[in-house]
Image (cartoon, rainbow, N blue to C red; front, side, top):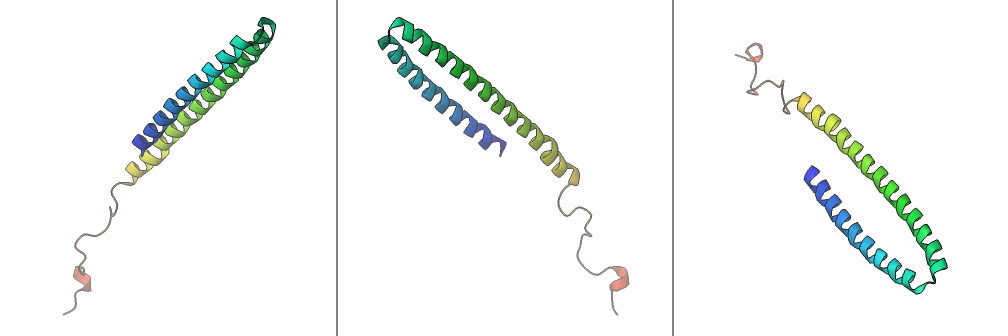
Amino acid sequence: MLGSLILALLVVAVGERAADAVERRQHELVLRKLPLEDAHGYYERLRRRAWRLRALRAVSLCALLVLGYTYRRYLVNESRRAGPQGAGEIRGGGPTEGERVG
């Protein structure tokens, strides 16, 4: 379960990085075509957007860490505390001494 989650996060991270590289390249092309005054304003907007995006990614990463901690702390530890399934059952399955007839 945890391995699948890590693999999924890795795929998403690689995809995001590739998408960011393509988007950055497109923005660089736009900046080259603009006059200096307009390019400066556009660049400032891009910087604010990039900062906001980094902040949201940090928040989502923290949320994932909290979910992982919660999963590990409560679900895994609860199953360990309960012991193996069937613990406490009487082994053998036959009638006890008092139940035998005859």
